[in-house]
Image 1 (cartoon, helix red, strand yellow):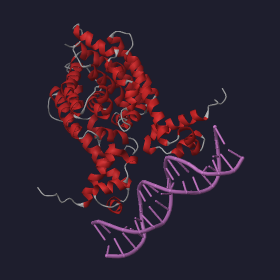
Image 2 (tube, chains in turn brown, red, yellow, blue):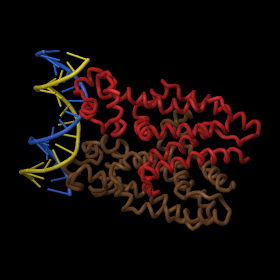
Image 3 (cartoon, each protein chain N blue to C red):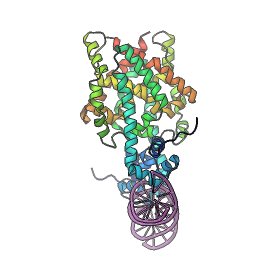
Image 4 (spheres, rainbow over the protein chains, first blue to last red):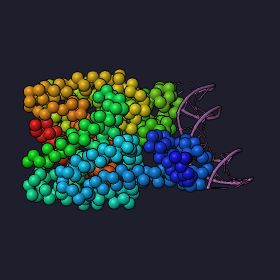
Length: 203
Length: 203
DNA sequence: GTCTATAGAGCGATAGAC
DNA sequence: GTCTATCGCTCTATAGAC
């Protein structure tokens, strides 16, 4: 396959994503983004007006991907237990493909106000998600113990996401190279849903 | 009580900690640290030679506090279950007093190599901790299910630390003000050890 | 030890030619 | 749309007076 012909705006965006995700807003330099994209600084400002606006467009996209992927899984029309296993499996796949994304999302949250959250409707998407309803219903039926949906979702998200945020530390403590880390994550494909379901079922 | 007479080096360190923890290495400016400390930039370099060395001394201290506090709890001479409840309780207290520390630690891990980890002996401290031994022994006795100590410790740490790393997001999703967030954390004082113990006990 | 003043490099942004 | 050249600012670090 020959070289993809990608328009300049896309090239800049891809370069910016790479550099911002690796170095953060302050650590990323427009010169490096320009070099990575194979263009000059003037073009960055031609397309995005400023470093800040370029960053915002990258961050909004990443945020959308990070939560959108979770929201989709959380709203699947599957029974509670099946869903928890699926969320774990699919979201870990997503994180393996985007290992730096959690750190990137977390590092900048708050610093930009809560506009991104509001625009994407994250609040209602979680609070009124299918998973939240299932947790309430199954508890009413006496099938699981009662738990606040927000607590449960943060419990689940934290367990999925934390090893990626703390990757160097985890790798060091566990003496893991890249393959070892991957294995560590894969062990959690059963560990996490097993733990969550065992907890929910015990009344 | 009158003004504390604090020596200049300490004043600088305290100012630096505050600014670095809030803005990260790149985002922190030596001008702001100097202003915060009530001195001028020349003095920062007189005492610490450079921004980088000042940062390193702050980071090493924070790292030591973050892991040292955990290591101490993990090596207590108490039975497994009691210990897990104690770790949760005491470490959440620690995090409530230092809510920005997890983000600060996580943001910079890896970027400085693994020297800090090595120097502090974090690896052996966790791998050969009393908690790790207890997990192995209790599993051999058939009192709990077998689990790799590293997995368990990351499970525990992630659940304790994650809400602080994702604080804005958690607060937004759960519609929590500062008091609400505090309550959210306090609910986890029972939630986390309950979940962990339920999981360990179920064979 | 602490200050002022400034060096010297790097930053984001833009003017203006093509 | 894309480039080169450069502006004006801010950054960290240091020289030198006290």
